[in-house]
Image (cartoon, rainbow, N blue to C red; front, side, top):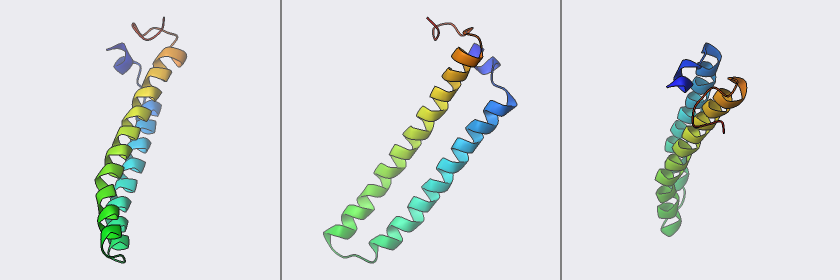
Amino acid sequence: MKILQQLTLENLLRIGVIVSIAWLVLMLIQRVFPWIANKFSGHARLYLLATVPLLRLGLIVLALVMIITYTIYYCAVRGGGTCPGICV
């Protein structure tokens, strides 16, 4: 709970930037990969289309990891080590 109390506007803006960039890349992946896949035929097209959900999942996980690690870093290092369970 103390992690949430230490979130400032600057931190929320950084988290917002991470989410915005992830959303833009997700939209780009969803539009560009099918367009590129239509240029191919057969197995290459199917493999390319099959990578779209995997890329989306990887990007979402990456964004969540970046947000969580940034929040923990800010709390533990910049927050003076006041978060229980994080600073040993």
